[in-house]
Length: 116
Image (cartoon, rainbow, N blue to C red; front, side, top):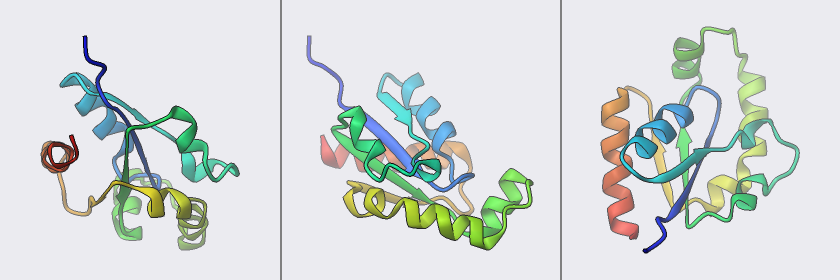
């Protein structure tokens, strides 16, 4: 039996990592969210030995709306700094501003079809 590609999803808090990982997993993908934005280990996301890396980006206003936790721009700037390697190494980069979960899932699935 052929192994499914392992997909790792990174991005700032509130960008949709968990929603996308759960949506892809429900459709049979080996997908997992990695909290790279909180790690001081720049290559944490690579330790999952992914076949593909999806990087999700969201503007500060989108994160504030989704998380409602009072994230400050400097905190998100630090997360983006920690995500620099993940962003550079990503096979797929998706902006999630204005997307509902089904739309994000469809965009990711379309991009994955082009990879595999």
